Structures are given as structure tokens and as C-alpha cells.
Image (cartoon, rainbow, N blue to C red; front, top):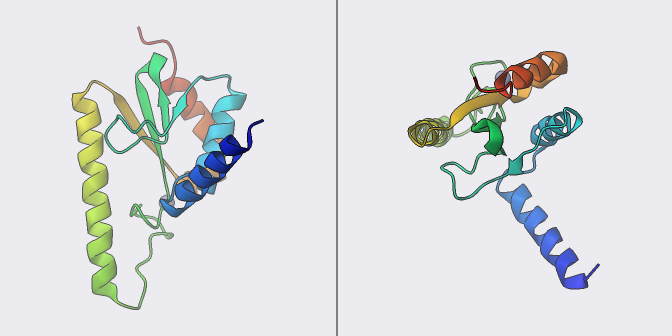
Length: 138
Ligand SMILES: [Zn+2]
């Protein structure tokens, strides 16, 4: 393996971590999909919102969202006590962007689903959902 490539890979992994990509919940979903024998692409930048997993054959984009950053209405989506205004603005911007991206994808004829971090506690259920989402389209 060429040394430049390793460096580039390491760098991109680092960048990904900084940008919140390649987070643990995403890795869980990714390996689940692998185990299911599905074929997908990661982080397609040419699509709105850079969906975490893209299944071209099924015309499906999956986002794996952390409950805190993306404001799932669950117990993990607490608001920090310090600087609440700062956070609520940030969170609002996140939610708006998520919504905008999902709408754009739908306009481009993609099906979109969001898997929330907290849902990964029941992997069987997530698996069933992905199975039905990737069932033959007709
Ligand atoms: Zn949640």
C-alpha cells in the first residue's frame, strides 16, 4: 500500500470525525447493512445533505442522526444549561438544514429515511426497517 494513500485516508478520517461523520451510530448501521448484503455508497457529496448511506439500486438515502445534534424529541435531545440561546439557535439551524436537504432529495426522486441514534438499541427492528425499505421496488 502506498504511503500517500494511507496519509490521505487518515486525513479524511480525521476530517470526517471533525465534521461529525463516521460517528459510532453510523458505523453500526453501516455494518448492519453490510451484514445484510446490501450495496451502498457513503457520504455522496453530490447529493443534498451528503446522506450517510446511499443505496442507488433502491433509490434510497439513509441518514443516521445523533439525537442530540439533530434534535430528536427523545431524552437524548436535552438542551445544555449554559448559553441556552446559542444552543437553541444552533439546533434550529440544524433542524432547518436537515429538513431542507430531505425535501431536496425527495424532489430529486430519492426516498429518504432517518435512523435515530436511540433506535439502535433495538437492532432487529432497525434491520427489519431497512429490509422493507430495500425490498424490490414494484
Ligand atoms: Zn433519539
